[in-house]
Length: 96
Image (cartoon, rainbow, N blue to C red; front, side, top):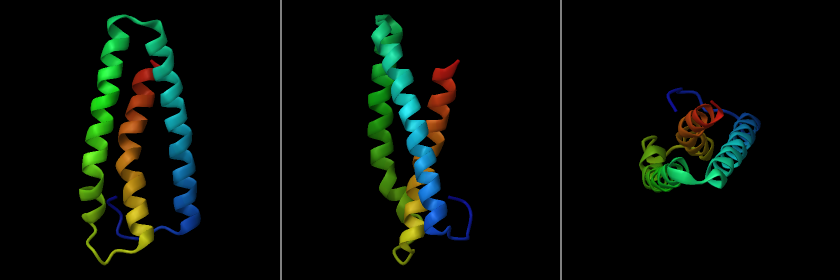
């Protein structure tokens, strides 16, 4: 999260809700791709697993970039921002 201002809980809740909607779309699009089978489905499954492992391993450093004395709002905003970029990229890629 590049902004220095901390967002309010309603703003964070809305961003989290939007992220969850995008995540649902990505799950749906990936499911369709995998149900079709073949090499494309295999690559998508491998990509999905590697992305999840990578995102999980880089989450804590991304949150802690704000320091130990950051607010809960700031840490939550960083977590949402951490997942927002790859989820949006996957939604765009899979929607083509």
